[in-house]
Length: 232
Ligand SMILES: Nc1ncnc2c1ncn2[C@@H]1O[C@H](COP(=O)(O)OP(=O)(O)OP(=O)(O)O)[C@@H](O)[C@H]1O
Ligand SMILES: [Mg+2]
Image 1 (cartoon, rainbow, N blue to C red):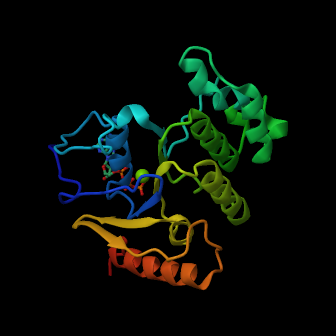
Image 2: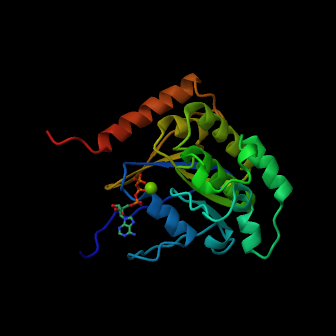
């Protein structure tokens, strides 16, 4: 099979304490970039550097919510949300976990196993586990993709509130989501990485804010240019 280059050389800068959104067609390498930053990409060859200001290695300061939720099937919702603390030697905060579980509407399911949850319920559990990690750098790979529009908007607002002051890199396919959350916008294509200008107002922006809608339409235009097309 041999190795194949995924994308042209690129430089991606993420603002400290800001939300950076990364969009781009399916298969272009967005998740691969997150895995590289998290120190999880062991296959393939990568040459380059990943730095976080002058504060040392990035991977140890990062929490990563993968595209596939990676809930442990033998643990309940509450136990999955508390998993990070347990793995690090028993310090977890079940009371805070329960508060968060209630806040995302899953109080009744706290003792259920992941297999008994819907896709969107599982995704909320995975997001809560990421929140409980309490790290300065947060990598989110399509964290709201399985949610209905109303729940998605509410979860975006919750995440913005709970991650305030953290450095967030969000991969999303949703131009509306990027337009309301981003301080910085990047679009990854095979030819390389480009930027787009987010609205001037501070996130989280209202979904129906005119500047959000203009930005959303602009992003959709760019994404349609690089999207897969049916053969003629
Ligand atoms: N473990 C792997 N071994 C070989 N190829 C892989 C592996 N994981 C991903 N790829 C390939 O690398 C490319 C980039 O994958 P990646 O998951 O980063 O894409 P993506 O931009 O996140 O796509 P999507 O939007 O569909 O999630 C794809 O062509 C994929 O098939
Ligand atoms: Mg992906």
